[in-house]
Each structure stands twice: as C-alpha cells, then as structure tokens.
Length: 66
Image (cartoon, rainbow, N blue to C red):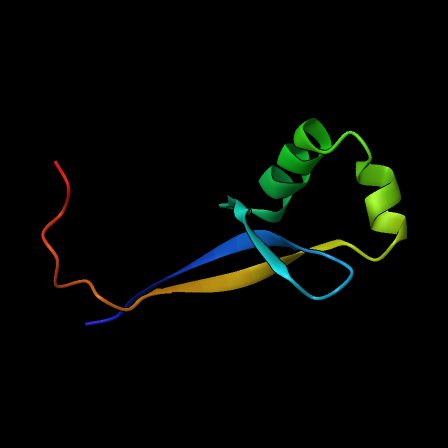
C-alpha cells in the first residue's frame, strides 16, 4: 500500500532535491532556508528554488515505530 503526502523542498541550481529541507509548506521551507542558509538570497539568485513535491511511502507494511 502506498501513502502519499505533499510537501515543499529546496531544489538547487543543478536540479538536485535537498530532502533535508523538506517542510509541510512552501512558506515553512522558505523560513527554514533563511535560518539555515546564511547565503539564502544569493542561492536564490543562482537559481535555487523551493518547490512543491509529493512524497510516496513505498513500504508502508512495516509496523510503526513506538
């Protein structure tokens, strides 16, 4: 069974998805980047952007961690 959720992530100027930037909304991701990347304004000038993404949990048969 597959579970899906929508999120926002940073994609760098090379098209790489930076999964550790994943947040629930675009505004939360933007805020996270402003805090964690001192050169965030410069990164945006170079083509880095925040995009919506869909996460698909492929193996949901495992028992939840307690």
